[in-house]
Image (cartoon, rainbow, N blue to C red; front, side):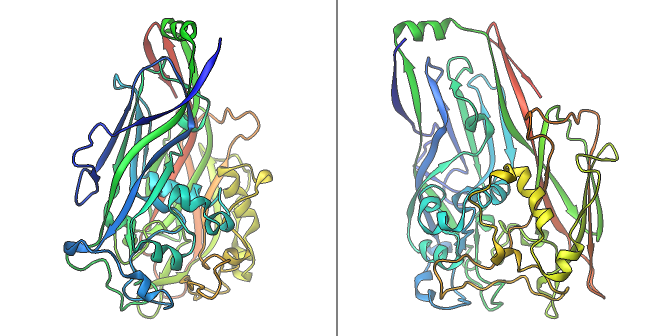
Length: 455
């Protein structure tokens, strides 16, 4: 059987006037990939288009460039430099054209806030690789300048259904990819955390973004006539893939316990990140930050790091997969790299013995507190364009099975996480949002034209 390789382009089904936004256009983008006898390379799939940032009712472009050499400009509005354009996707759903859902990830943007920086180095950001795909430049100072004008993107979709084995578009009955866009005040932020005089983005109805010229394209393998006929006759098969289930929790104590009935049969990893709840959907703060717990300074600004002491993962009340706590108390108090916690959280995202690219470095890790009054606010580091911003990339997580990749059975058994911290004297924990993602394996069984999804 001979095959030919081709690139297929799909326009949005709900194209409308061509503009997608939570403010000025449709807030969902729907791509329908036809059922056809072709093999899709899901890793090659890109959602491309043009991103434009606009200022309130005037719809004018930001003037970030005029403040480029200011350490704490009042007029900048920007997106998260590490997550880039992935921050605009709030919910990602992959279905077939008959309505069966293969994968749904809520808070996809917060998941990418952990995944992208842990798979890309600061060199990848600054040399343009992440810029080309994700629209992220790593440094706030350069990201702000970039948002002055429209720019193109070609965004990969980081879902295991697409990133796994090639997809038989005939057998899966075509695909419907539904992208629900995030609010503009989640995606866009100003510089208020570092300069309380900044009010940019909030005025005249608030800054907003638009996506235009949007299309989806991917590489596909098309067999000859006999091969296509065989694919159209085939009605049986099995497809295994990894996907994420998302959970949300609010931390309000220095000894916080989470118990979740995740109900996943082949659980591979738990991945999580933290942000102050008041920062979400707030122009004054970066909703895509992944920091450890924060307490207020003398001016009631959340900037002082709370010392993280221990994190414990349990299964049905037993410490599994680690039979001990992940202890950060000594490394945090001494201000050195929190190596063991980092090892486990990295291992939840990628095999830690195979790490070549990631944002984490001594520059970010040695920003850990020497005391409970060390500020978490970071410098834009404008003198050096070859180094990252001094910003934490704090994740929590653990891997259950890197050997067989079949995971652990949590059906009927709750997942538990205990997070212990030490508060400064006279302070209380402000609500912090914890976004948790369970990476697990699904199986789709196709039998006589019927689709059965097994978790």
